[in-house]
Amino acid sequence: MTHVSIRVALRDVIPGTDLASVAQPGIGAAIWLHATEVQAIHDALVADGHTIASAPIDGPFGRTFTFADPDGYQVTLHDRS
Image 1 (cartoon, rainbow, N blue to C red):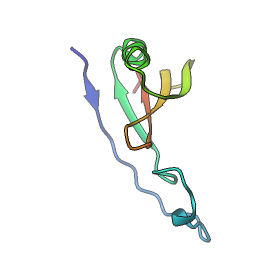
Image 2 (image 1 turned 90 degrees about the vertical axis):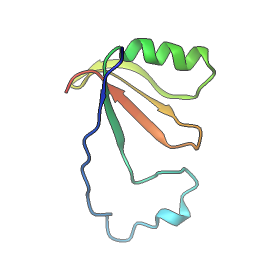
Image 3 (image 1 turned 180 degrees about the vertical axis):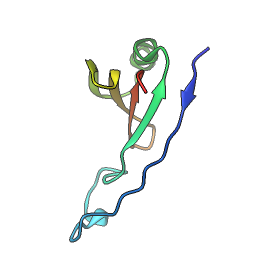
């Protein structure tokens, strides 16, 4: 079973930023989710034809990668909390 936990951090938009002028959905929002089995989730998304925005790497948050959801929002999964 895969376990996912969600924490939310809200920050102010940098003054002068026009979010409506950017074509990418969710620009200015960072969606990071902690999950177990990050590599297996990545492999399943690839097999299903989903867009991977950044390949898996090992970094300070453990195994991490970013994918685009069906609406184009970028979601990052990591396995170290």
